[in-house]
Length: 342
Image 1 (cartoon, helix red, strand yellow):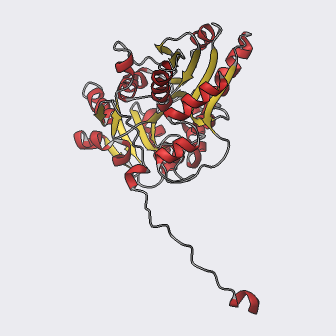
Image 2 (cartoon, helix red, strand yellow):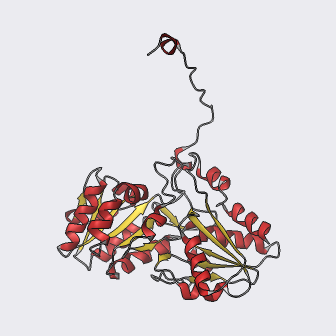
């Protein structure tokens, strides 16, 4: 070390007086006007486990943050706390599945998709074992920066053979996907909404029920077709109501299953002469948008096509409302982009 470098002084960084409340940086996504359900995943799993003694729950020291604590409290003898070791979590789940159990393994989406991918690929997917992976903080549902934002998880798992992918919109989807995951013989990766989860779909379509591998039209419209998944269906529906006041009629096709994709419904609806827009809480690389684009191109259906999603970059940290506005996935962001394209 030189004398000059030893003498160098660094001025301390200034910290702004305004602090972001923690609650604004976590997965608090309920929009105004929607009722909420507390811990729909944990409660649905407990209900299913009452009549299925093969179900077990595993967590990597995050049960409170995936709502698996509800299952742990109700059935402690069937809950396994694996500590901060995601590779061990999924290896143990694979072993339990081989022995005839039906393991639900939960952690944050970043830890499953990045840290434990090889273990999931080799121990679970390659063996086609019925391990059910449910992961919190998908996409941009936390403001804690790239270490916690799983903006590319669907792209990572979409290329993995045998893996089913679910991206739920609301409490109805989350509760409904649990029995569907149990019935599915293949491994499943499900994005998870936790805590107080809004009830969105049944407000717009009272008879809505989650169906694995099925896209459903939640709202029809003549001008624009939005094909959306996850929380972006909520944003698309809210934007559609806003645009209706401005004379723009927007249809919203909800796609809760990314793989297998309901190609027949997508091809049919995209071929009706409307502006076709995909909307996803995920990078525009390798997710719903590109899956839909590939489907339409292979089918020879060529609507005017646009994508709403997260950019191909590491995202900023901060309050969720600010970040959603910044990256164009807020209700206003969706509405503005659709108007601009029209």
